[in-house]
Length: 485
Image (cartoon, rainbow, N blue to C red; front, top):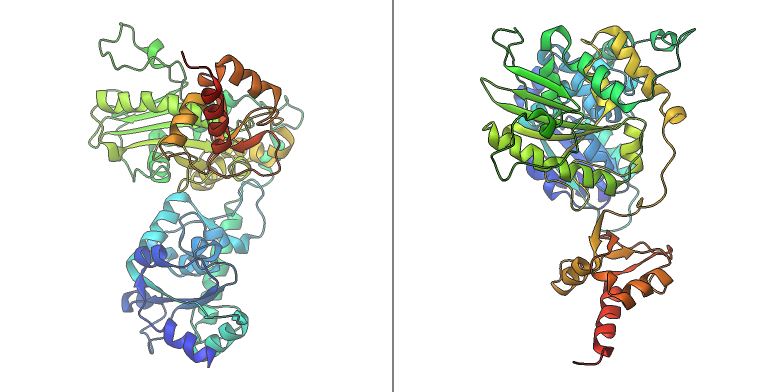
């Protein structure tokens, strides 16, 4: 009975991917991916024999969670068997290039990834040709058993585990070819030879942001700059690098105030001396502005990153207005190692509160995977070596502010709570609600201007953190106990 219910619910054609992803419930279940006739033909599977799906899968935790995000999320081919099969079959048609999933530690080449621009190309194709159906059981059920019955009944061509189909060998052969390409793209042992008998590895951030990064993205007279702009969400760009007619500028450690020889006439000109690590401006035919703040071995907190990006956002806005760049052609990017992104739980689709809207989080690993096929081998090896030795070379975690999303003054916290915008959030102060520090702030009135750590979600078990509501109650009781004048 259960398998027939699942089969009925999963019957095609399903919903288009963008709409389906938004409606997928946060519950366990099964899903089926369907392709239109053009998809079957372009994948080399022939004409559809019937209305069977291309792929069937199960989500033991949440349909809206890990499984579907990996299958349909740009940048996740290395973790998705469905995307790897699609990429292998579309390799020639879409011009896709396989690279190791982790260029810094190239291994398990069967779990290949795609260069950044190719990830976008594959996702676009999926959104144009695929649809999705889901089934959520009414009660407890062994999803694996239901999944097995559906695989045996439908025999989807892209499922490789638990079923053999007339297309299995075609898919496997295509995936082996992509795995071989990923293996050949490996920098190999050259990265380990760069320091044999030489100087110790340079750990300064400016070396990687001011030297290595430009050597990668500006190679061959900016011929591959479009790979970076596609990673940044700006799409491909073409530039003229010839000195007499150049349309591109690339600056590192760009200080606007130092670069402006005359006193700025615009009263809204930024006064911050916080310099982005790299700025790319394309003057035409489409004006593009890309501003990058990068970290490699440094390990700032989310609060510190948010403050730095916020300060730089004023410069980004001013440069965009001053050079008449359309908002959709402006990108502010944070470039960090995968390990730091995971440590700080950073995701472009769910930025911490208070960060500049639209900030895109990219990783050095993504950048290396994107540029490895075209970059000068030496500079790709330099970056690969740095990433390989990240755990060894990373800075020690600086104490404090690791749990905070931002800093807010006591007055801002009180007003936010009173207006209902900070209800349920927590704040941090050394010693906690009853600690001597906060008591001194309350007694002296310093609490109004004193910045406190703040986060939107609870942090139970940490004695330094407490609900903003309790702080507001203390302030209210304090004010009420003061004699009226």
